Image 1 (cartoon, rainbow, N blue to C red):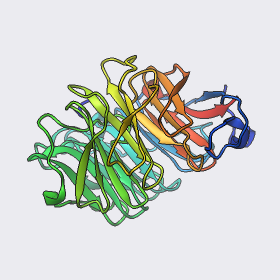
Image 2 (cartoon, one colour):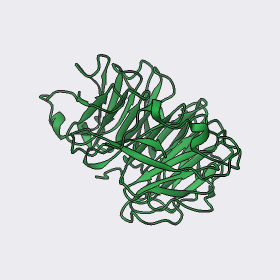
Image 3 (cartoon, rainbow, N blue to C red):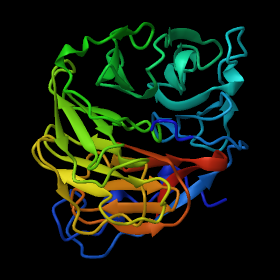
Amino acid sequence: MARLTRNFLLGALLIPTSHAFGLSVSTGFGTTHAQPKLSWGLLPTNSTARLRGLAPVSDSIAWASGTEGTVLRTTDGGHTWKSVGPPSSTTSPDVSELEFRDIAAWSATKAVILSIGTGNSSRIYATSDGGLTWDLAFTNGEPAAFYDCIAFATPQHGMAMSDPVDGKVRLLETRDGGASWTVVDPKGMAPAQEGEAGFAASGTCIATAAGRWYVATGGVDPGRVFRSGDGYHWDVSNASIAGGEGAGVFSVQFRDARHGIAVGGNYSLPDGAVDNAAWSDDGGVSWTPAASFPSGYRSGSSWVLGRGGVALAVGPSGSDFTLDGGRNWRNFNNGSFDSVECLEGGVCWASGEDGRVARLVFL
C-alpha cells in the first residue's frame, strides 16, 4: 500500500490574511462575505524529482525531498534552491536510488529525512549543518516493515510509522531530535485489519497536535484513523472515507486536541470526488463525511495555522480549501501537488512531481 510509487510573490507582498479570506463564518479571518481568491506561485527548483517530502520552516526557509535521493533547501523564500542530500554510500541501495518521502526541519541547518522501501531502503538520516553532512540514524532490518512517514511533537520528540508488522502498525520513536530511534512496544497498539497499511504520499499519514498522535491508513474499507494520547496506547476509528486497494485515508491533520480533518480517496482515480474527506470534532473518536468533497483524490492536507477552520488539501488533480473545518471543500487550482504545509500567518507551501514547489498567493 505504501509502495506508491515568475508568479511568485514574497511574503511581504502578500495581501494580509485578514483580508485574503473573506468569511461570514467564525474562522479568524474577519466578517466580510467575499470568497477567498487563492493561487499557487510556482518556484524555480531546477529539479525534476517528485517532491513528496516538504518541511517549510518560515516564509524564507524550506526543505523538500523526493526521488533519486533528492533533498533541496531554500533560504530566500524559494528564489533559489540548493541540493543538499546525503552523498553516495557503500550501502546498497545507494542514496541516489532512495526515495525520501518525508522530511522534518526546524531551521536552515537541522533536518531529518525518511526514505521508503522494503528492507534497508527504509532509512532515516539527520543533519545539523544544513546538509553538508548527514548521519545515518536508522536502517530498517525487519523484512515486513515499510516506513511511510514521520512527525515531531517537539524538535526532540518524534515518531515514524510503518505498515503493520505482526498484525500491528509499527512505530519508531526518537527523543533526541532524530539522532537515534527505537521501536515502540506494540502491545498498546490497536490491531490492524488484513491488508491495512499507510500511504507514503505526503508525509502526513502520521500527525501530532496538542500532545496527541494520529495515524492514517487504507487498504481496508473504510479507511481508518488510529489515535493516542501518549503515543503508546492506541484506539482506532472508522474515518468515513472509502477504502480498499490503493484507497483510504492518505492524510490526517489536527489543529488542536479536538478538531481534525482526514482526506484521501483512490490514487488510481485522481478525479474521484466522492467519500474522500471527513472531519472530527472529538479528537478522532468519530468522523463525519464532508458535505461537499474535494474535487479529486487528495494526498496531503494542512490547517492554515491560527485561522480557525481554514485548511487546504492537495493532490495530482488540484487543490481545495475549506473554511469550516472540513465540512465543505472548494477547488481553487488544477495543478498537481502531493504535499502541502502551512505555517502561522497564512504562509503555505506545496510540492509535487517534476520538481514543483509553490507558495500560496492571495489574489
